[in-house]
Length: 498
Image (cartoon, rainbow, N blue to C red):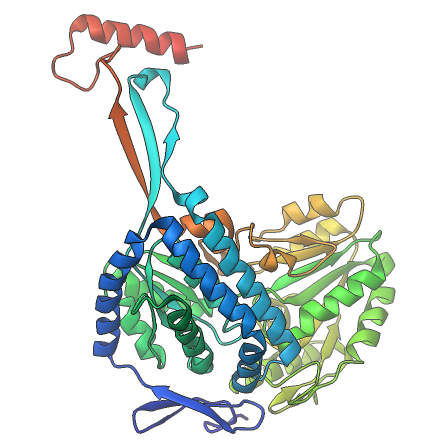
């Protein structure tokens, strides 16, 4: 069983949040613990700073965000080392995460004006005397509650887009990775020099709850479905709109005409990178009968070569100590109910590490299939055809991402997945594509970050009409005559009645 003082467990000492390495327990750093009043003050300061930030316009914000992007790129190794020290993620994986986040900063900065700026909207004949105009105005102050598993990529997907849209941001990083969050805030201040436009408040769930009730104009949350429901309940008290990304149980489908070597390579990456602590990671695979045995053998061969350890290994420690119990429970339940471990198994959990585990013939109603594991485990089950694979993939309440490997019908199968995203002959690729929206359905949440939809998520649509001339069919006036009404009836029948 895990214990309260396991390596990586956040501690409080003299009013400061102490962050430790999940691999060694060594202190990485400490930051002031925020009070409810601190959160309110940060939001109030953000409101004043946000007004100035919005006043810079798209051009001014673009220049400043690109300066931040440049600084992030120049210090990417420093950021990766901090992510490794605080969260345990292998440095190479942390570099991939940071570079992907930098790409999103760049895209948001360069495209905000095109997506959100004022534009003319065509009117229809019924109101031909009016012109229509649309723009997206900033909310004001956006609260962002970030996760520990991707402490750079995930919050930046909200922060950069919210800033590009003209908002100020108050950021509450996970208590497991507060130093990474503060590093992002500090580098922004260094590059941009706009005080209080991006600030951080640190602490546990009570600080997140305070942010929900602080008067922010919108809140973006990433975390578990259970916590998401609490966030929504708190925000509902003031009708604060929310954007929720609440995890997943992503499935991969392997069809009979798939390139099995490519599928196995991608599957091992999708399932075991970041020690399986990936919301869009592959946790389930459904392989059709003719290729099942060969595919499993290729996955086991590749996964069996992965190394596990604190430094220089393919798989690092489990960041959140309590998750070790979840992983252990899922493995034990799968084995007790008739599943077989073809790699790893009951002894795979060796705190703070978990060795790669591949389970086959696992019942579909087991915890390992239906619940988010968030560890380096994978279930692979055989199915008679892709129709059964789609049915099983869609049978869980989550719906974040997914993958399909095949040739002739892979795209059609991907479209049938009940998910916000899917990749064909790859895994996780949609996360790095800054032009595509990222988000889920069902218990994976709602709303989108990234891409044009991600920018619009942080702006209020504002519609404006402008009269250009007299009304041909006066309707919105008490001065209309019976003849005007008769003409409207005639026009409606001509335009819509056939």
